[in-house]
Image (cartoon, rainbow over all chains, first blue to last red; front, side):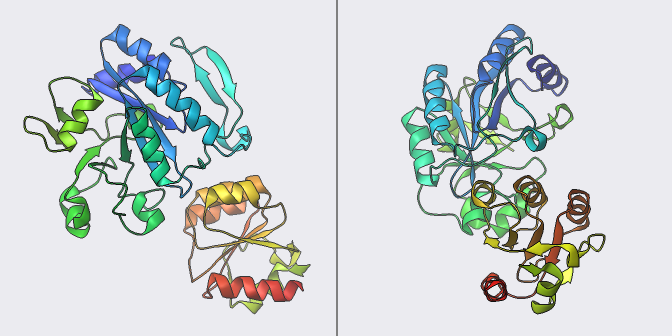
Length: 224
Length: 112
């Protein structure tokens, strides 16, 4: 998806703040950050990491410099298997004008060697916020892969799928009631943008305040 | 080597890809795994894959790894979208009520 097309779509959906969370890589964040800044839409650096247990964990960063350093470590932790473009397409890294800067050869679709604990510890070391992705999904969620929500690592915020009926789901999964939820589209195509979003009642569009809202600090709210 | 059709008979199996002839699929080895990334990294072409996972990604992984047949354990049955994709890719799908352990054991014995 091209940054400009994404932002046009976001505008159509009335969305003012977004993150991209490519699988196991933040390499495309600079292009989106540049276009977002030009277009006056808030953008956060993000990634969806696949742990060794095949759990998907979202990571969001406020500081691009930290995100870049994290990305380097994440890349080094990936199984060194070559991508097969016949099945997964070319893994392109683009600039803000959709020019292809390079094609990533290592398969990003695969898992990191980091287990869940290590993923979270690494994210937090680089100042990021770790959010288990689509916890209600039947594949690649913390529940689908482990069968239960472990006591550690401790999470304050959980990602949910776009169409989840939260009321019914939290009745079935009371262990998630203590934390906060974050709904997103997980859009892989332009037409999916806007299918799921959250309203963030914060002072500033930054990840640190999402964390404060997740901790339940007064004056902050995430509404799904 | 054994014929997949003989294996299916030995495990109370059901062929979910009738368009593919199981008697023409020869198996000399198998891989038992329920993690896609591990199968992608370690399974070998020609191995049968014994698993409980039945979602669509399983077919892509089988196809790219050169796995000719997937055996679903514990009565796990793939849905039509998965069956169609498998037929298209030439990956035979078999399900059996037996456990992964039993399926692997029977395969191992037949290949001895």
